[in-house]
Length: 61
Image (cartoon, rainbow, N blue to C red; front, side, top):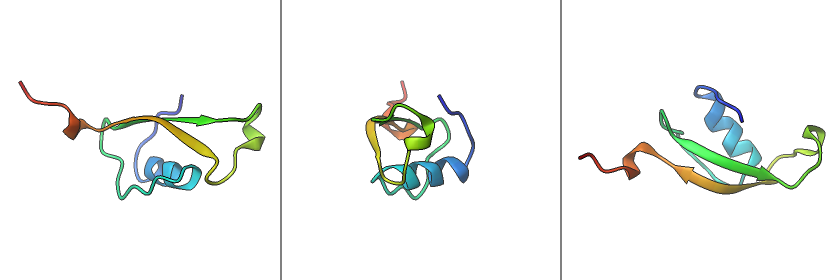
């Protein structure tokens, strides 16, 4: 699990996945899977998005 702040987290997601985000919003969450056995094997665009959720997707009640 990596918890960080922008712009670093948006850049991280854009570098390691095929997702092209302009901005990962505050409290936005993305789960990325890497089919690797060690951190050294992680390369650009080899992450697969398993889950993403942004605050605007939640309804106010």
